[in-house]
Amino acid sequence: MRTIWPDQGLDVAALLRGGWRPTAFRDVVLKVHQRCNLACDYCYVYTMADQSWRRRPRVMDRRTWRSAAARTARHADAHDLAEMRLVLHGGEPLLAGPGRLDELIGDFRAAFPAGRRLDVRMQTNGTLIDEAAVELFRAHDVRVGVSLDGAAEANDRRRRRADGRGSSADVDRGLRLLPAANFAGLLCTIDPDTDPVACYEALLSHRPPAIDLLLPHANWDTPPDRPFADWLIAVFDRWYDAPRQETSIRLFEDVMALLLGGAGRSEQVGLSPVAVVVVETDGAIELADSLKSAFPGACATGRTVLADEFDAVLRHPGVVARQIGAGALGDSCLACPLHRVCGGGHYAHRYRSGDGFRNPSVYCADLARLIRHVHRRMSADLKGR
Image 1 (cartoon, rainbow, N blue to C red):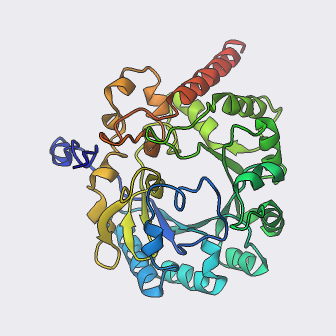
Image 2 (image 1 turned 90 degrees about the horizontal axis):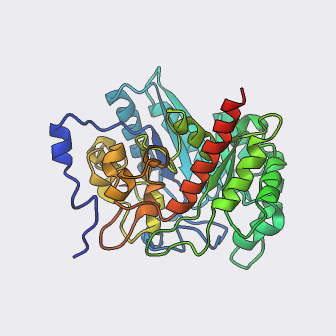
């Protein structure tokens, strides 16, 4: 039988007896469409361990999203949350069509308690942004994140259609249509074979208010085959040395804040509790879907919005493990002086079959080099004042 921490070994009851309490969910990620019009070769949904997308409905139906809306509203009321965030996701959420998405967002807003704010976001590959989509974004004040991996040639090596055609031209067209008021930023999955500064400057040419740089999902069973630190450090130096701040890069800003004793906002670093829950097209309530990169069923909770409140999974070991900070780290991480900054790295990147997620990140060496480099740069500047 597979023995995996935290499902075995994390004593949630003991934590509760000791006074620990879960953090309420703040973000609900709604998988409105299960399929995608791209076939990116690194996609954790379609190319990695968990293939549950194959047996799920292609698109979420109204009964399911209305149940999700009611659960979200009750969660906000139960925990007295002034605001929650709804993230429309996939697959590719725009495959659901603007009419269906208009109904869905309208139903969520109608269900949400008076006096509490619902912040609606979307993460899209950008290829289907057209005038109808823009009208939807404007009508419902949707902030839109777009996935793009740098310059056209670099992007099109990895982010392709099933027939091999690249996606960058369509993404560029979509970004030109997207109003600045609805543009949340760009998400870039790092390819260390690309020129880091050229990649950053290609992203910057779209004037994003923020850029998320993501390490490709990997773990100790399927480790990366090359280092990433040099790439990250080159981009950090280009970003940090700019005469003015050109954009926000959450990974770098979080490392800096954590080095100064503050808190982070990212799943990639730091020890802040993760307060995200996912609802699949069939209504299944799941853990963060990056865990699909680990093993089949890694996201499952056995709960569904058709029958259960979100509170039913707040004490699930997989949720608790991402909310107890240093309590989720193994001995080697706790012995490292950087552990309060790196936080053990992204949870999905800690997985090893046989013992689960209580390991350092498979990117441990890269994160350590980046953190030490950022520390040196900041220290030099602070001493020079």
